Length: 240
Image (cartoon, rainbow, N blue to C red; front, top):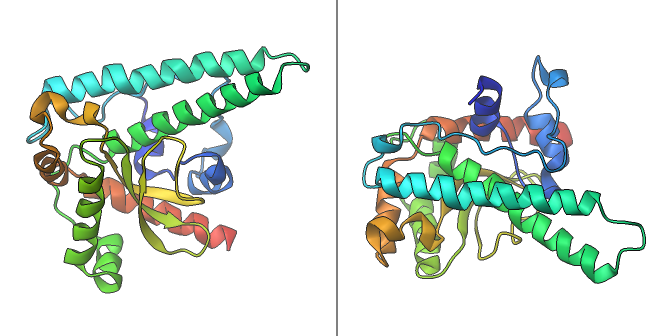
């Protein structure tokens, strides 16, 4: 994985269509002009930013299957959908266009959220920094984590995502859930992302999603989360 791509994953503010403006600001830097979005149908999976066997409580088999099958599959399907959209004629039926646009959103968001999820793993779970301080002062260090865990637990046995985000609407911090790849906080810049689809834990834990949530917290790369927060604040300041 190139350093530019790694920097985007760790520091960038990446989200759905509602965050395109914020994304361009948040990832801007000295070499911003050299970066460009992939052409439709040319997305490539990003390698794991850590050694698959390095996680505590999440096996190499589990994380590799998740990355190589579920995430890479979403990228592959996004490329196919984008190619089909690019080939549409102006007289294409509305239901065809609508169906492809829905699938495009599904696979794009799946790709982005998976990349955030993998990029905020590989650490030791120890928290520090400006975001940790703010979470503690505004919500309470134990309270926000309890709320995040409870949201994840509510999705156990089903599917979805839990996202701690900074909203570009008012600069506030919010914990949200997505029970579908097409559901997300409007203008929410993802800071901490947890995949609660069963494909993220079933190989290791079966239906025991609670133990998986515990393992997730032990492996958070908090420096990556703090870096996202810093870039999100700069993006919000530029938009305000």
